[in-house]
Image 1 (tube, rainbow, N blue to C red):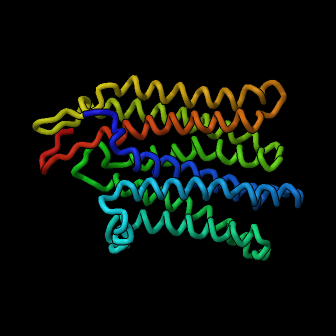
Image 2 (image 1 turned 135 degrees about the vertical axis):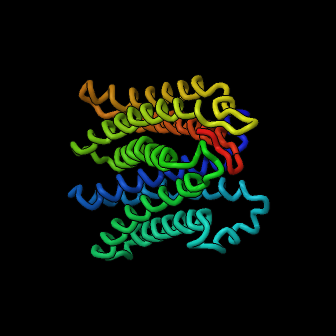
Length: 287
């Protein structure tokens, strides 16, 4: 029993990876349809390096979870058969396509047509990566607290909570101030509200899940308190993001960095609760 902090490498990998996926989608859409002036477009393209640095950190964390990091490539041995192999393959492809495309763009070696194809591919691979990550957990029928649609829904909600904020931060660094930026806080707010509904429904469902020796509600004794902390941190991040705009100003870069750190902290708490709810049962599952 606990809060899942022993799985911190996986917490970092999944949360950072999903935030990067969401941020990559925001940046790709801005570059595809934003009609940005050449100078702003160039700055936005260069700012995307932050995405790939964060993705690199996420993959380093995932390797630390392995018993023998030197055998990390063995996780790719069963692509198409193993959800874990599919996840690593999908994440690696997203990272490789995104990072290589950014590098070619940074050195002005990517023609306009290929640049658009790269951005579209990045959007598709970001969604596929989050889906494949969720499948690692949602398809394990012997872990009833993870099995089913709650897991992929929660993982995509993390993408919609952290991704718009990260994308907004990078666009602000690039000096982009278009009206469409004002839609991004609304997306994060909506995702947070949906997440609260999901957690309420999931929490009610936990009371009906148990094995012969274990009750799901006993796995994380501080379930309510931890999720309250998560809510407060993300809500505070949203306040730092939205309040300046209500006053007619754009939030500064420093304020947005703080907001993103708060969202990361909140989502890591939520993901810790997720891993803390791990329970394994045999053939007989009550629920």
